[in-house]
Length: 170
Image 1 (cartoon, rainbow, N blue to C red):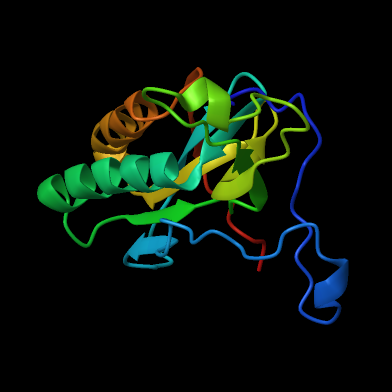
Image 2: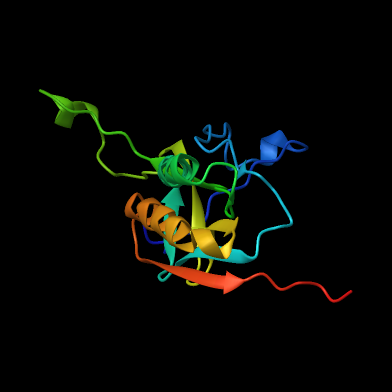
């Protein structure tokens, strides 16, 4: 489900396991959140912002991260810093249905369908950044192309926003 119009199921407690709504958390495909070289010499930030409220699964975020990082590493190695700005918390449930001959006699359809946890997702608000790239002014076009490639892997609509890094007054 792409649209976050239902109740979130994210309750997983280590202290009170009997009070959990979620017995076992599904694993996340997203394991790396920062790539490239963190440097103070960067002067530009490029954000990939959502335009609509949406729910993104962890495997879609990982696919977009790989596409952006591969483009940046291939064209401007060690001259960028890419950060994933979201973390998937929302547990997605699915009611598995039996298929094949005689399945209608076995399954009860969607009667009291609560489902089992199958994946996790991040809920996004409009204007919220998904990825952020820090780089120099000379490499803005490369970073914008990387964000465009990342957006093509995600459902929904996105906008690439370029802004300068504000230097702290000394």
